[in-house]
Length: 276
Length: 310
Image (cartoon, rainbow over the protein chains, first blue to last red):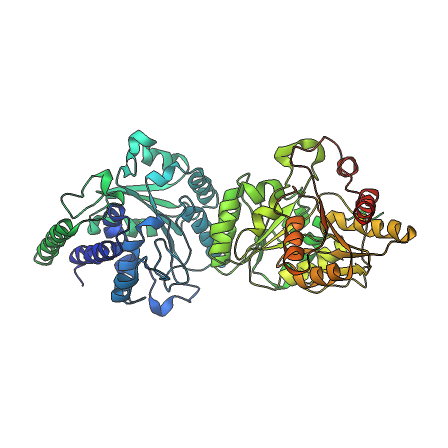
């Protein structure tokens, strides 16, 4: 099987190229969410360019739409569009590769960008799939700062009310948002207990560990009668030493020296993963 | 006097369509009673989804269901649906282009005595400003039925606003002129063009009769399609007349009056008066009491036309 750990570092370099080229983007969250997306797209979800119109496919909505660069990297690796084109055109004048997911592009189901929408939308998708007895599973990824949106909790409530065990939500729990620590801005302590209180099955894992994530998603597939939340404890900026756990790298653009240093570190990590 | 409100006409069309199209689903936010959709919920329990008092969720869930192949109709009081869930309508429905029909019930000042929280005098402006959102305001139950029969078949987002109370018929049950996205001409005239929508069509029609007795010839246009607006009919009616009057159950900004003024101003400049609710919380009362207070009745409209012509 393909070395997914190495792949996650390799795809981070595409993110870096997009952001360095366009001089805009949300690099910190891209790097925290990368293993989540790689696990889902490369191993867990039944989504591919070949089945994108099959009603029985799985569904994915990128609720934390600002991590679009990571999303584009993974979709391109999956074959939905050429990565060279994304890197060349990302956020440029008249580009279709805009700074948030846009469903005019292949592989993207729903537009996002405003936070707190992905989960309620996925509740609707999961409910419809259940009504039609489809095998589809429905996935979304939210940021932890996003959890302050009230609409998230409307969705959390409804998903357990409808007993949507075909729904799996991942929280990219990197503990940082644009203004600083999520716990200072609006705290989410006892997050597991919060979801459990709403009737969810909750799995807390190292969110930059692909093996742990895949085990969690496999477990979610066996859960009956309620939705699953995977709390993915991640490192914002994961993979580049000077970006890790720095709120400032939420949407900072690297200069040339930083870009070169980041490429060097990611290449080293990719090679180390390949040699593991 | 007709006893069937437009919302009930909506339910009847959906009830019928759902028998043969299992993808039609109705979603309510604890609003099945006020939306007259309880009969639908009873007849089609497998095609009815209760979301609870959560309008944002109502719209997002509807969008998700559309994504997965359903044809959702989300019904909730217009005041909440059009503003509480505005962003969901913008992003999840219009921007993502999901086949969701948003049914705003008890629109305008239908909930007369309940105060400004329950009035939707902003919904035309709000919804018309969203790209890819169509906006319809049918006048009577027969037109509502015709409109809904079209909407159950198409695949695009739309917002439909209806009032709470039964309104007098404008059209005959067996002979309701209707063309999708074309305003209905009730009468043609050479002195004034009166352009109205929703519950204001009835007083507009009566105003034309009053004016006729005064020797003034007025046309009346039922502009049930606010977006896409039937500009061609507005221009034709305005060109034929000396003055134009618009009438709507909406705030004075961004609704029918603003749009009519734009079209007339750009294409055939002449005097336009826009009759609407005030830019203030409306007084307490039944719809009829409120309309009468603000002159949104046949006498008020006729008076406005005579004032403009004098």
